[in-house]
Amino acid sequence: MAYLFLSVGLIFINILVIKLMQGILEKEELLRESALAGQKKESQLAHYRDMQAVADKYGGDFAVPCDAEKFQAVVML
Image (cartoon, rainbow, N blue to C red; front, side, top):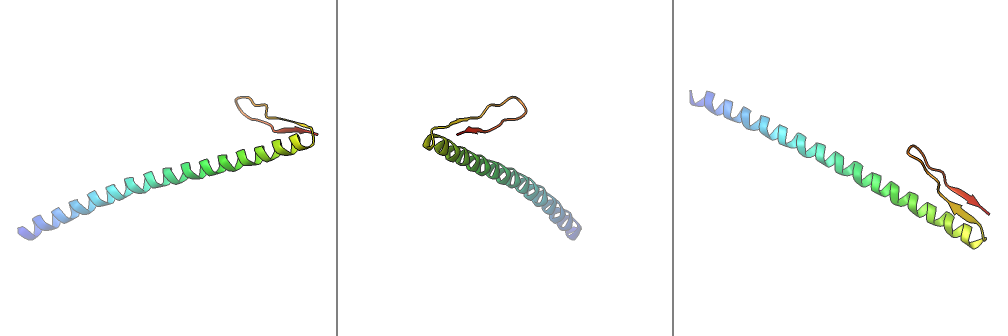
């Protein structure tokens, strides 16, 4: 009887550990996706700053018009 109780207890503990690890891995994936999105955004901003610098250097104009669905980067030299 004690072995049965011990076995059921260990199975229950294993299920709890698996659920806990699954939650941790899901949160880690969300954090990783968020970090990658942030890096992509910073990279795009740096690219736009470079385009603005080139437009300023050559006396041109730089604009980023946007609407709810898309945006365009326009450089006029």
